Image 1 (cartoon, helix red, strand yellow):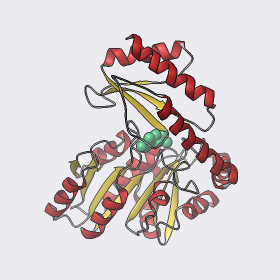
Image 2: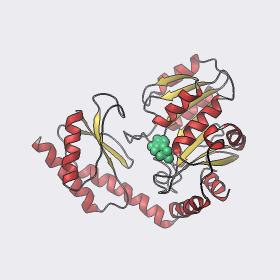
Image 3: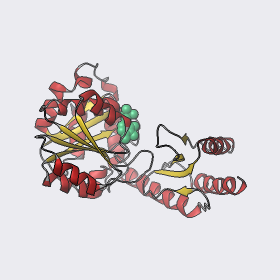
Length: 309
Ligand SMILES: *Cc1c(COP(=O)(O)O)cnc(C)c1O
């Protein structure tokens, strides 16, 4: 209960009348929230961003709702889909930071469309919570959004370093989830020790040290980008910890990942079906705990590998 109150206070500037509910994993939070919202009304329709995380997609499948998929960050297409819908309950679902691309959803624009078309907006901020926003409160703080139609999901196994996730929304939505989210109701609650550890994570995120870590992460992102000098491969545009390098070819990306591993760098090779065909990539994930030397050496090693292949 203490943890949920603290988590709600993290987004209280962004969602009026907010309450929060803790789930054992982000996967369960997404599946439970979408299925419970789908049970609000038989006419529910979901509008889903093309690059959404698998756990959101599984929630939609389990909910057996009508799903309209809009292209990546294409708010024009989203608007025409919303305009064409006569559903009484509309739910737009998106990641904030795309987990394999590192870019940000145009949330201010999407929220405007939701207001215009009377839709809920569910935001999965797995990669924003703790790292985005001046106080580390995530994507809603980063964009300065405020609305009672926001349903916010922050996961706590990434920047928060422990595990689990929370859903934050206007308190009557949370009451509904307590009754109807089956992944919450039919699974044993997490042990209190986890809540205790998470309260400590939240203290760190809010502290001067947390702020310094976010500044350091941003500095390392800039350092990587200035040191990488790629000629054939492309570093995707990203201002977040996720910095992908697009190679395209599945075998080559596996080979380069292995070469980096031998040189002391752990950079996973991401291939289809995790990403669309012909978009295999290296997924560099930076952390405030990396040293300047780590990041410079990674960039130089990659520059060198590229020039020899
Ligand atoms: C990791 C992740 C999840 C799942 O969270 P878990 O706590 O690991 O189950 C959900 N959404 C996104 C975007 C993620 O990156």
